[in-house]
Image 1 (cartoon, rainbow, N blue to C red):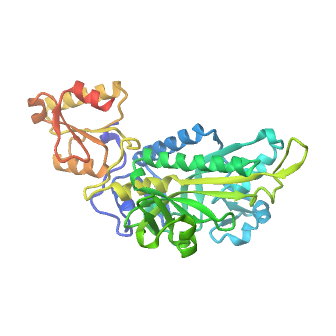
Image 2 (cartoon, one colour):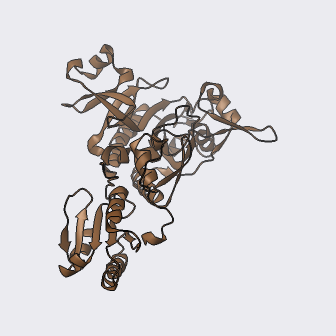
Image 3 (cartoon, rainbow, N blue to C red):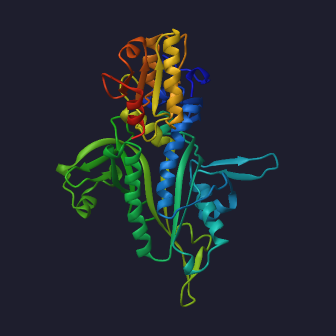
Length: 415
C-alpha cells in the first residue's frame, strides 16, 4: 500500500483526554479513532492488526474442534429473565424501541447460544461440542478508561463448550489452558502472560485468568516464579495458598492486564433452558458447560502497552499491519525509480509492504512516523543506499541498519 493513498495521517501530539499509552499511540498512528468515552472505530492500519489477531485465535479454536458462528447482538429480554441476569447484571444495556419492545444489547452470549443448541441437540451422541464467535460486545462500563483496554463496545472471542460428563469437561478445559498459552505466545506476549487462579464466583471454586504483566495494569496478581503459579488478589488468603501449595513470602506482587479467562459454568445456563440429553439408558441429564473468552481489542491494546518504547509502537511480526515499511528518501528520479522497483518486487513476492512515497515529507518526519507505526522492518531507499549498492534494512527494535541487496531483502522477509 502506498502511504500517500492512506487517508489517515499521523499526529505529533497525544490526545489531551487520553492518559493510557495504548490509546495515545494508536490514535497518533491512525490505527483507531475515538468516537466517545469507551468507544473507538478501527481504521485501516488498526483493522489489519485486529484481523491478524482474530485469525490467530480462529486457527487455534478451529484446531480444537470449535465451530464458528455469529450470534445476534440483540437478545430477547425473556432469555435474560430466565437466567436471572436481567436485573442482576449491572452493566447490561437495555434498549427500548418506539414500540416499547425491550431487548438486551449483548455483553455475552450464554442466553443466546443455549437456546440455539436446544433446537439441534438432544442425544449423548451429539456431545461434546464447542461453539465460538468473534463479535462486538456491549457493556455499560461506568469506568470507561485505559483506551481500548476497557470500553463500552469491544471485540471479543467467546467460546462455549458442552459436555455430558465432568471428566470430559475437565479434559477439554485443561486443553484450553494450553491453547490460550499458545495464542498469547503467537501474538508476542507469552513471556509476559501468566495463567492465574481467580474466583469462580457462583460457578465453581476457581476460574482461570490470563494476566499480562505491566505496571499500568488494573489487576494485582501474586506470582510464584519457581512454579509459574499465579493467583489474583481476590483469592489471596491463607486457605487458598495452602490449597495451592504456595508460600506467601515467596510470592511476588505484580500489576497486570487480564487478556483472557476460562470458566466452568456447570449447569448455570443449561438448566434454565432445560438443555439436556438422553443417555444410552434413555435417561435425561442436564448438559455441562464451560466458557472461554478473549478480548480481541483488549489484546491488541495490551500488546501496545507492554511492548512499545518511547518512540512508538513495536508490533510483533505475527500481527503487524505490514511486514515492512519502505521509505523513499529524496525526490530525485533515481531514488523514485529504485524505490518503485523495490515496492513492486515486494508485492510480487506477496510481502505486505507500506510504501512511504510521500514526496512532501522530510526524511526526519518519515523516520519518526516509521517508529510510531512500529512495523517490524524498515527498508530505506536513499542516495546513500543506492551508492552502496542496495537498501538499508533495520528492525524496529534495532538501533542501526545494514545495507542489503534486493535479493537479500526478499530472502529475509520471506523466511
